[in-house]
Image (cartoon, rainbow, N blue to C red; front, side, top):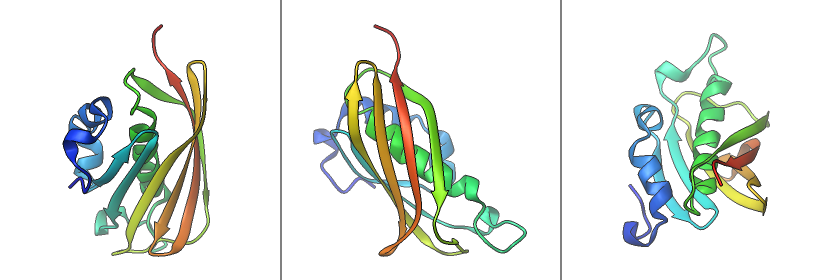
Length: 137
């Protein structure tokens, strides 16, 4: 569910989100979308818990990556990840509701840098940095 007016959201990012079967299959919800910004929510399910009883880091990464993809595709041209990394700050458990907020830091030529913070309530659980590359032209 998009809290902001869907008609006012960047069309290129919405088209990408509407076709994103992987993110929706994990129950991700797009909450807010604007120029160089996206906020996505996900609840940790049984299928996401690893052998330590914690959320597998790949799911936290995927949530952050989805927010990054949305944020970097708000300008129109197809933009993809060139590189990204994540720092896991706190453990995530079954039932935790996570929110990832992605923001553009800078764009230069066909490249960009975006930061995504993943939170459980007010607590930061991960910090993600993505480097984008716009395809074509």
